Structure formats: C-alpha cells, structure tokens
Length: 334
Image (cartoon, rainbow, N blue to C red; front, top):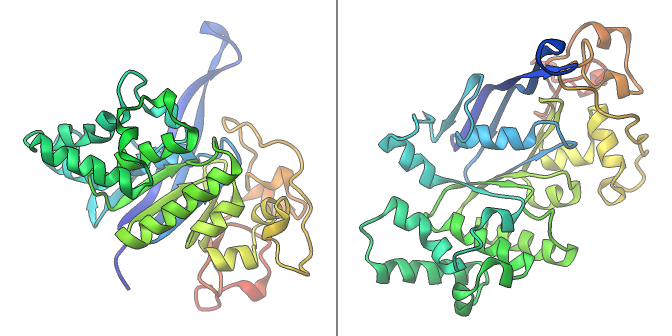
C-alpha cells in the first residue's frame, strides 16, 4: 500500500475567547475549533470532510496547509513535517499544496485581468521564468479548466460565477501541485454549474493524479467525488472511512441523521433515521462526555460521563460512539 501524501496526527486548534460581556465584565473561555483529529489523504484520492457549519471543517483545511498554526499535533506532507514559513522547504511544499476557496470573487483581485492573476504564482515562485514561457503556461492551464484565450483579458466581475471558479482552479494548478484543499468550492454556484465543476475536478484528478481534501456540507456531491469521508462534529471526527461503506451503512447517529436529510443518498428500502433535533451546542461550552448526546436519540448515561474514542469497525471504518452495534466491531481490534 502506498504511503499517505498528507497525514495529520492529533491535530488541534484552540482559541481563547471572551464571553459574558467586555472588559472586566467578561470571562475567558476556550473554543476548541479542532480538537485532536487524525486523518490521511492518499495520492490520487479524495478525502471528503463533512459536517454542519461551525464544526471545524474550514479550520482543518487551513491547518492542513499550514495557513494557520496548530495548537497541538502535527501535519506531514509526503512524509515530512510542514516546514517553517519562509524557508526553502516551505516554498517547495507551498507549491505542492494549494487551496481552492469558496468565494472565487473574493479570492481574486478585481483590479487585475484574470490572465495576470493565473500567472502570478509563477512570478512569485519562478521569478526567472521567461515571459513567453509564463504566458504559455497560463494559456495551457486556462485550456485545461475550460476557459477560452480571450478570457485572459477579462476582469473578475466580467465573468460568470462558474468561470471565476475555473480561474481560481487554474491559478491553483499552475504550480503543478499534488494536493488541492477545496473549501466549499461549489456552494456559491448554480446547480447546473456545480455539476460541471465537479466533473472537471474528477477529470483533472484522473489526468494529473491529484489528491483532494474536499470540504462540503453537500453530501450528494461528497458521495460523488470522495473515496474516503471524515464526518466532523464540534471539532472532532465522529466517523471516518471509505465513502462507499459509510454511505451504505452509517454507524454514528450523527452521520445517520445527516444522510437522512438527503433522500437520494439513503439506500433503497433502508429505514430512515430521524432528522437531527435542536441546534449544535456552544463550542466554548460543550456538553460533558459525548458532544452529540444532547441531540442524539440513542444517548445513554455513559454518553454523559465519557467522551467516546474512535472504535474500529470490521470494515476498517472508525466510529466515535458508545452505542455501535457489537456485530459491527472489529473483534481483533477489540
């Protein structure tokens, strides 16, 4: 089996916030945006990262790229720890790892034509590259993502949402990365354009052997594009494994409830779990034990006392739940 391209071990990011007023009237609290997660991204495969808004998905994406310092844990890319910013090793890693943002208009400079912006990473990382070669690379990347040569002279506001997202994708690809972290890359697009961008991502992955971390709340899209899926709740992973197994037979009550809200991803004839009740708890003041227990129809007294660790299932998945059916557990691991 090949080695992971990207691996996070016990990764955490905690913030100190003030609650209950300002100045002397407030008090400090700790918000655990990401709370000790471990995951792997294999070469040429896609890891889908899903969960409700505020669960820590986007923070995880930034931690994986080193765009935000971790409070604990480590990230390794191609077997090596993320390098210190500003070093030669860091510059090499940054070229191999790129981000595709949710809002393409916000990610682009409205004052510059998009062709200039696509080629800008080459100016930064390869300042000695001849202009003719740089322009040729820009034209090639534009063609690869379905843009026409005349689009190079357009400004972001002159393009459609789908075209702007293709510009952002071309800019991310021009340094020939091995990994893309895609943070809700299609949520701002119309449904028909979403399908085009997803198909483009799939084609590029096959052609270039790209690895993706695909962050989304849209489980239909995640099922289409992902090989593996990690489900997050309040900063922790509650279910993690191959996408096919997870969608076919979800084991964590939270995963089951998420899938229940999407009719097309529940297998025919399967009992439909009840939708999630209530709102997520305050992340700065989470419940004791299992953070999901206040919304879980299967919660027991044990759930209030002890936070469940990830347990290995017979099919290799990991589930953080006290009430997993015994016949699903891996006997050897137990």
